[in-house]
Image (cartoon, rainbow, N blue to C red; front, side, top):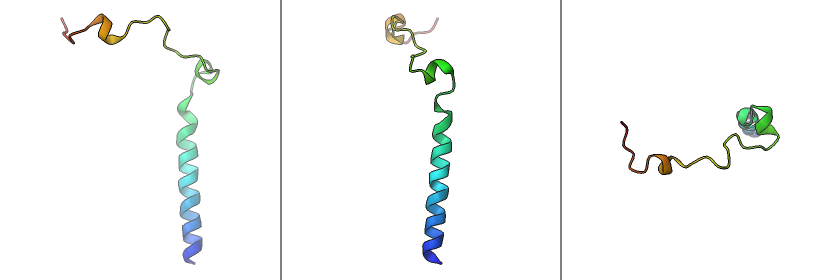
Length: 54
């Protein structure tokens, strides 16, 4: 009985892990491996180096 509960618990954890990883890549662009961030986009520190908002 104890082994059966351990197997059930392990199976539930595995199913939860699989379903939590599935929605990671949601757009066709991300699934094909293309980054949604442009390569030439400036870093946030480049456009606002001191973190000051106006």
